[in-house]
Image (cartoon, rainbow, N blue to C red):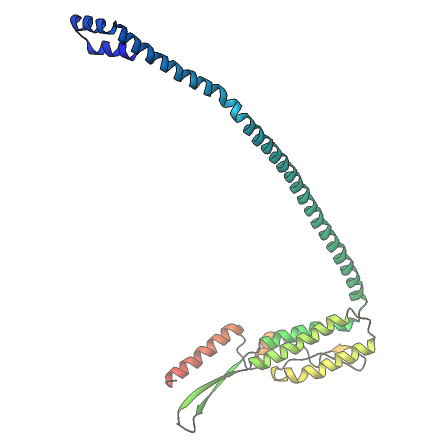
Length: 269
């Protein structure tokens, strides 16, 4: 077929074409062409045989990998079902924990409320007075400064001091007393023991808060919680402490520090 197409493309003259046909008609040429066609047919037959044998040659391997894929798919399905079951079990367990925690907390709250309702009422009253005193102590921050001269060099410097350590000490002790009041409300403790412990706290706290002019509750001769004097508000308390009541503690601290820094700058410190 390719040879015929080649002849068409060459566009030979009639004479050249006749000569070529005569050559092609020679027995030797026809034998060569026949041999060539036979070889091509043999090649095609070999390809056809190879083509037809492909499915058989691959069948075993395809069967093996197909079975492996099916097995893997079954394992995946089993794993997915197991994951779903595990998630459900986990969620059920979480809900069980939540339910157990809720039941415990509900029971604790119920019993605690009963204990609080039956507790000595002086404990809650004493606690409230301490809480108020604690707030006044925390508002009583002050800063002081003074000039100090070195005896060796004669150099003067400004020393700045605050009462923060005293505030922290008083606050810590009041916190301990308040915690003890809360603890006693959940204990089986006699009225006499309550009175003894509250009185002990009164004697322990008074020296710590004396400088802050804060009242600590005590017990009168009838065992009732009392204050020696009427309770003062924050403004009156700050005035008694010599502090500016119109400023918040943070504003007061800022202004006092700023004044001290200005004084140090003027003295070249």
